[in-house]
Length: 329
Image 1 (cartoon, rainbow, N blue to C red):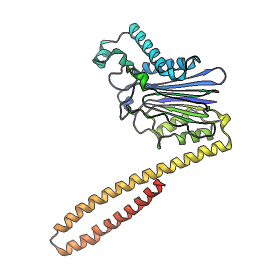
Image 2: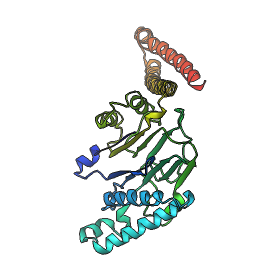
Image 3: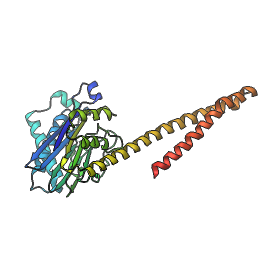
Image 4: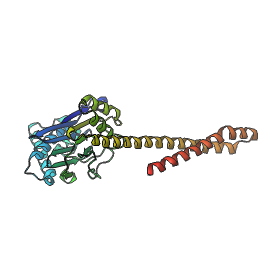
């Protein structure tokens, strides 16, 4: 097995001199069961103990998911109850300071510990996924195909996310139980955003080089996909026993296909920007041309300026249409 966990403080937090509020834990149970957890403590001003809240979330999730007597459907309410009990006990032993209360405002004191949660249990019986809030769980089966994604959370958008401190947190969890055992798993906080959405490039590199893949490789991946400046954490699990040549070929093909989609997307964005710039120039240029009183100057302007831009505009439109047809196939 290869299991790596790496965190990186975001540029925004570095500028504000705030610590990384992501936490992760990995636990082995018996010979062949693993529980991976990752929690992203909220970075907002009121969440003054969110880093510790993230740590509590990881610990409570591991404790609940390690208990074989607890059915999967009860994970959300059990995790929520254990988290609440822990935070209330911590508040009793370590009351909020005046400065913390000032930052928290009128919110309940437990909101100081605001955090998301991602957790995966990998066992011979199957793979169990638990998610509250943003971030992403990416899982491959023993053939190299991705598990179906968990349902989207309508409460997660922009910088808004579901949180373990909310009273209805147990109802906001998304869970899944599949009989297939996972061969590769990536948990990541929302600061890491792989282009295309699924971390195929990371997984392909890790699977292809699993014998030598290490934390420094994950850090390089973080740097290449740092689009927001937020804290980033990645937890990677690899079961090399599944890595047959067919498996590696499947992952490599998926990574290449995803890379091609990303390339076309960037090309589309570039063409759309060129089209907008040409449209703006032609609109202003035609207005200027109609207002020109000197016919000779107008003819030169039309031939030297408007006509080449119009030809370029038509060429961009044709290229864009062809690209959109390719992307629709």
